[in-house]
Length: 403
Image (cartoon, rainbow, N blue to C red; front, side):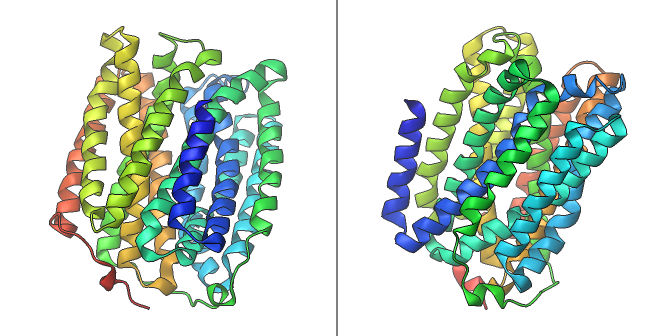
């Protein structure tokens, strides 16, 4: 019922905001990205248990968990630039194929180092920037926040479905089967991608290597957001088990993601009306507030408080996914969207890798949540300072975007 409401709300926004061709491209790209991320999220709830089959070292397990982030970070910029030159669909197709191979390696890795290798290969298919660039080239400049919100909701729904279905499939089959299923889902994601009609103009862009200092600062902020994201996912199963078994995570995730998705969509329209910087600040403040709410769960036993803390994270995260890519495309020349979005997403996935490693080390060596809470809280205070440094909290207008 709730999924139908979400889908209806998304379709309503899309039909009003985009013409038929824009609607088609946004829908197909959202499905492609959503299917691919579904494969990533399915393994999150069972990854530690799977890693324990190969090693007793939680540092190595944490490295395997975050390994895909470092190769995504390394390849996002280069693949984004290649998509500027050779076309989005070709580069996205190569990325999906790499993702499939990586999952098949993870399904039968022999040892923990094979699992790390599989995750590295999985992350090498880093095509988020090419997908976002394809959408941004296809929709009006004053509708990009809405398009990013819809992609963000697709990713959020993939996470919700993944953490529900992953443990259930592991119970029915086994842990390694989750990676095989993720590879199959990756193969299915070719179908909507092939239905996208890419224009000749999109294929003729030249490679631009320059990354503006303001773009670099926004990308650093994205590093901090994703650092928090992976640590959030690392702790979420631990905190959730106080209230629900893994098989019942959906009882709080469905309403929480639904509420956060509606908030993200509601903010997209005013953000498009020259309030992108304002809502970038709002996203950072909401995430900042959610940090102590979430990590102090160890001292609170109220399930309502827990749901509120998770909702705070998701709301701030989805808002950030709505507005920060638009800041990039407002600052970047149109013929280098892929390269600049590639650098942006590279920093995001670098945050995934370092967040997983640092979070894992603190769990192992400190065995409580206060140090990581302080680190992340400080990062978001610094992020707000950085946002002021590049914008003075004033709007970045579309006139800055030149061909």
